[in-house]
Length: 81
Image 1 (cartoon, rainbow, N blue to C red):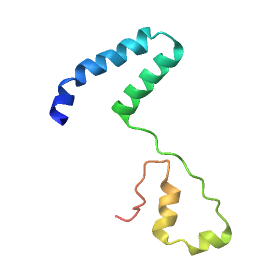
Image 2 (cartoon, rainbow, N blue to C red; image 1 turned 30 degrees about the vertical axis):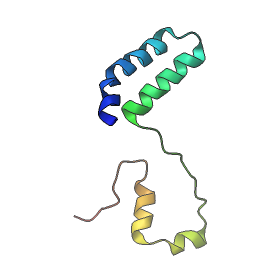
Image 3 (tube, helix red, strand yellow; image 1 turned 180 degrees about the vertical axis):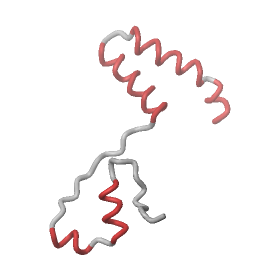
C-alpha cells in the first residue's frame, strides 16, 4: 500500500502546488502552502514556557542549566573540550 501511495506522490505534490498558486479561495491556497511547508520542513514543535524561580533553578542540574542557556543559539550544551 505504501509503495502504491508513493507512486502518486509527485502528482499529489503538483496538485498542492497548483492549489497553492491558483486555489479557489485564500483558505485553499493557505492550506496547500501549509501542507507543502510541513512536508518539506516539518512541523514546528509548540513552544512551552517554563517559569523559572530561584527555587526551581537551584534544583536543576548543570546539564539542564546548560541546555537552557544554549537553547535558541544552536548549542548542544557541551562547553567542555
